[in-house]
Length: 137
Image (cartoon, rainbow, N blue to C red; front, top):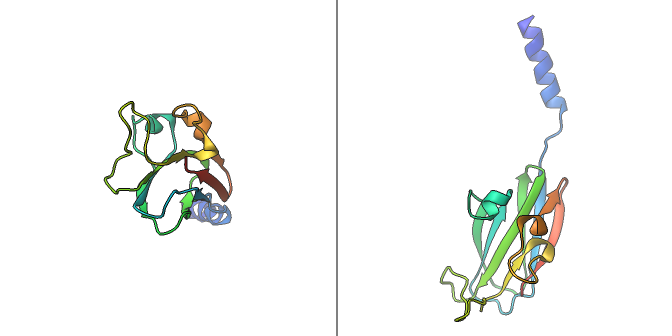
């Protein structure tokens, strides 16, 4: 009987398609192809607010005014991306004396026109392979 249950469980597992999706994001409007693109992918409000770990935190070397990045095999769900163009490669988003960014930045859903957006404003629903564009400001 145990053997029959194990075989049945294995057949069900093999018959179930993999539940994963790819997220491709294109970053456009980069002022000049120097430095690095620093980007972070979040899957929750807590992580987005700095109270947890991001899914991915990475940097991409810039050699053109646009970048295309594909993240493979993500679990379907809600994701948000924050990024900035670290033109001087110092690892920080530089700002002026009153705190306004002096380097380009962007968010998924083109969120944050008036200040930093919430996770809900920037979140993208990932159910299937999805492609989005993030325009650097």
